Image (cartoon, rainbow over all chains, first blue to last red; front, side):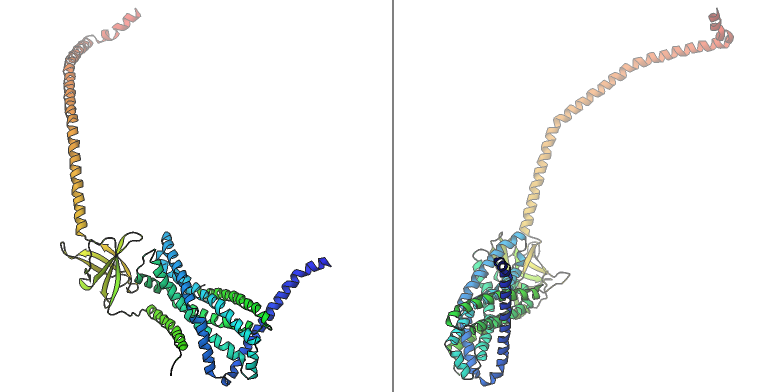
Length: 267
Length: 231
């Protein structure tokens, strides 16, 4: 009997996980479908109330995170510029400073670090907020009043996240380039015009489109996953579990999508 | 319509990055926010020839001036001269900037030359490597070095000549000895020549006697020896 258990434990657990994952995927698909169908009730809702939610959400996701994003961008930009400008001449490729900066900061680090900040700050907050609303029966009350909660809660957050992440990525890249340049002046002199020209030469419209697609994808996925997990807890004790699960899965998905978009654009 | 503080902050948060994005796109498309001139840089190892205000020309026509010269300490000391030039002139990124004098004693000038194969246009902020063609100070320095080298070469040749004089003397005296030896040999040989000649004469005399005898008694001459041998 014990030997039979040994043989079945590993495949049993694997199968349970796969089925569980597949069930989550199906649930998420149903959740997305319910959001799409919720657009039908758009005519019954006051746009002014949606506008207020969007503004509040942008303030929380974007403006309140601005200082944190600027500090991280300064540190990352300064580090990358100092490393690049001191190490590239050893290989005789100091002319590629602009290219290195655009590749590292604009293409990859900017969108990724901004998404990580938004996930850890706003994603977890969204899950908690919706879970608490559900636990305190606010969502139930809204449904009783005939308000489509999917439309009222999810859609403004998606719009706010797309706008916030796009703005944060642009600010992150700008601060990383120019703040980093100012920091790097303490160790190496590069003429400002020359630096700006190197950046402009290296920057392409493909980079712009890639950054915009990334910001739109992250801005859509982060609130969707957060709202999905926010609606799941059935008691207040399940809230931390779902918050943690939402953050981890969003992080994983963002890394996968980041790699996928980079492969599509640059390979 | 009054906006709340929150709305204004959110508006700025959306609009400012949008403006930055648009500015980046415009700059990438080649638009500029500057006027009819643009600043390009001239990288040069020394600033002995150029100074603030040095004219910049193309085919002799002045298109701008040097407005600033800044030292760059890393990786090695060199200088970046900011050249403010007119945008109306068509210049290409591979053009050369030749630092030269207007004439043999004239002020220096920077002459732009467009490449034969034209690439992209020269943009504001581009850096051009300066080439010094005629630098009077460097030229005079080189001439001075040449003259000093020539002077040292002449002194070395003079020294060699003084050292060789003694050797030449001994060579001449050795040659004189050799000539006298040759003379002595020739003098000694004259005596021998006389005896050789007299010997030749004796031999000829004998040969004459033999021939006379042969004519007179040929048989006797021929067979006298045989008879003696048979006897």
